[in-house]
Image (cartoon, rainbow, N blue to C red; front, side, top):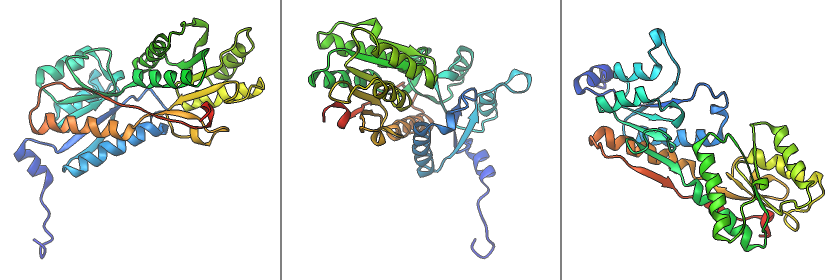
Length: 298
């Protein structure tokens, strides 16, 4: 083999085994920010690592319609170019999932889906737990009028974070004030404007929980513009440690999300389905971790 520089023909091997030795990762082609998302990239790195360690290639495909309305996902499946798929919740369409179930084709959802929740395996971050822990900590530090700032209210993970925020207030015996729940479009100017507006009221919040770093940056900017002092007058916690929470002034306490574990778990579940014909569905929530810094008197 060495003298003749022989290498096995992977196509012939795959044909003989009835396997492509590839797993597919579907991305939402409509979201232009997908590849600039540090959390997405961390999860992809984990998926790629698991795939390579088990002799599989990772094929990334956009969710878009092709010729004769046959989607790129359907082509992967029907042409057996992959042995299984990892899907984002946004691609869960009834016709597609019903076809997967009919064909007994392995797939796992990266994120908790709204549709086919019990009929599919999925892995997500425990967003409710994250919000509840954040509220518990803020209350323990004496903050009582806690606002929540978020966007994309149609996303299930945002709804879960909001529910966790409300649950945390209830557990602490605090009233849920709708005026302190700030839902904005994904607009940097709106984050700032809405924060300035609520801080200008007669009973402004004394703490903020933000759904991501981008929101937190503009909320903090507005707090400083209104000349409030963090954490003495206003406390702050944000979801996500990356990319800038620890570099803000002051460094922000965060609900850390382990996106590597997220990708690793979803890839391992898919491998079980492919190699062990494991048809049972798993629903897994990855725990969050509270990292305390100067924005909450720590």
